[in-house]
Each structure stands twice: as structure tokens, then as C-alpha cells.
Length: 170
Image (cartoon, rainbow, N blue to C red; front, side, top):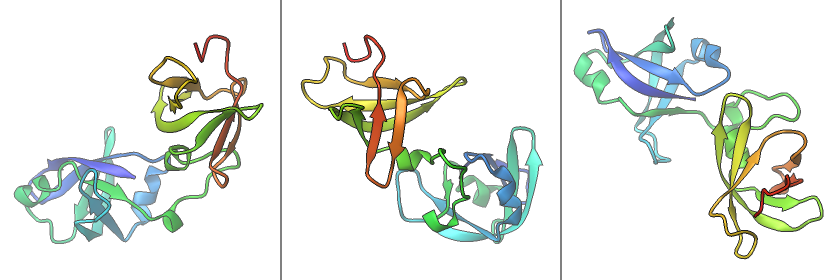
């Protein structure tokens, strides 16, 4: 949901950058769970004393974080929620974690590879696919997320169906 990018002020506030389309939900949260980068184990759950917007981010005051030194130790931590706490998305929209790991296939059923990343560009997202051996000489297949290419996304089946553009697999 977000990342602690700096300490703020001398009362122990932290500045976060929200990685969610719903930054307003921080206002309703009672606590945040902080995780070191590349870890599934939280360092703890911190009750939220206050939350306010500030320029391109949010300032959070966490209970028992009362100094610059304490806040600075949280820099780089990620704020995560469990799957059952996710905000519902409109039909046809998916969270990035639901896309990564899907097997990419053509409409005719030919397996191409596995989605390893989602690049968020200004115009449209791009799915990065690690191709299976023999599919292409490219190290990655870049799939623009546009209706002409992405035909179906079925996370429950683990499948992404595409219609490759000319030259995409060369």
C-alpha cells in the first residue's frame, strides 16, 4: 500500500508514498503493518495516531514512534495489507500481484511464458513475460496492456490470453 520514504519533523512522524489507488483509506486505518523490503514478516503493527496529506505523499504519526531517530529506522519499510483487506476493484481490473505469475498464452492456446513484472507507464501498463525456451530469442516479451493485445485475464485459472502484435515474438 505504501512505502516509508523519510522521517518528518521532530515528533516521530514518517512521510510515506502511497502505492495504492485508494490513498484515502489511510485516513480510516487503525494501524499499519510495516515490512522490511523483500520480507513477508512484519516488524510490527503500529497504531495510527494521525494521518494527513503533504504534497506528493502522506504524513503518518505512529504510536510509540516519538523521535526522529525512531522514525528514521522505519525508512524503506513497506506498508502492506492482507488479501482480505484489499479494496474491491471494478470488473476487469486486477491488482499487480494477481497478474505476476500468470502463464501467458496466445488465443490459439500456445504457451509463451510467465508474467514476471508489470511496468506502469503513463499511457498503459506493460506486462513483462519471461518466455519459455524456443518461443523467441528475446529475453523478455513486452505485452502492452491494450484491448487489441490482451484478450483475457483469468487469475483464478492462472492464465493471461493475448493476441501478439506483428513482430512481438521475433
